[in-house]
Length: 284
Image (cartoon, rainbow, N blue to C red; front, side, top):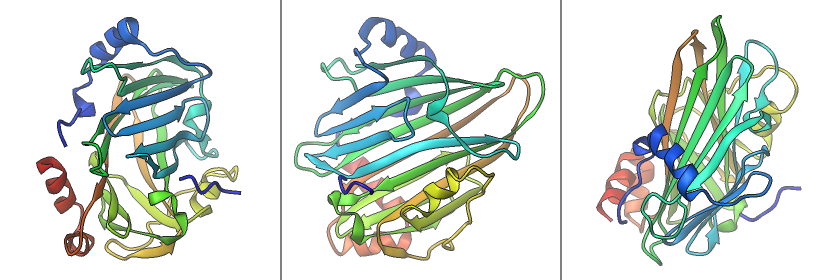
């Protein structure tokens, strides 16, 4: 049964270069057991199990847990999707890049057959009581194969905003963004580059079953762009399809924001998309 658990500066994940991460891992790495990590920044914390398909299984903002699960799946060719987090982990650790005593960045390197996948997370909390926080994510997939790979990458997300999963609604305001909301609390994700090739919103656990049913699947591109899905226990996913050529790199950059948007701004946001929320977040 599914659990019901549910600014100031931005530490942009794109600014975390590989050199900085490796340096940070050697100098400031957080101790972890069995792939368990917790990032902390200002009013926010996020928990990870890097070797489990639960992966990011908690995101607290001002003490309220809004996230049930975020994880990644992949497929090469027409075989069934597999959890990225089941792959061997070559390197992982956290860093405190702003030297405030809390670790707000996580780096994980997974080794696959013919590729390496590196995932970087950067947590940027808001001021206490603001209800706002930001999570930047960057996925880098590097070929180690001498032949092209028909690659398909999936991100699955199950937010339970305010720890109440049954009253959320969601929509795709445009092809590279998603909005999920519960009253004045809004979660948005924007895939900066490249734009996902497919997307889907469904009630729990329709998408998760599709990713774990043992056959090759694609997201359905439903609902249509702009259409509201819900209310209910909504989940959503993005899919990227590409050919990973020998000696090439494919990089996905994304940003998640949790914000409190009072009426009537919330209604305006839900009508016109993610741009207003990004603007409000940057001005906080």
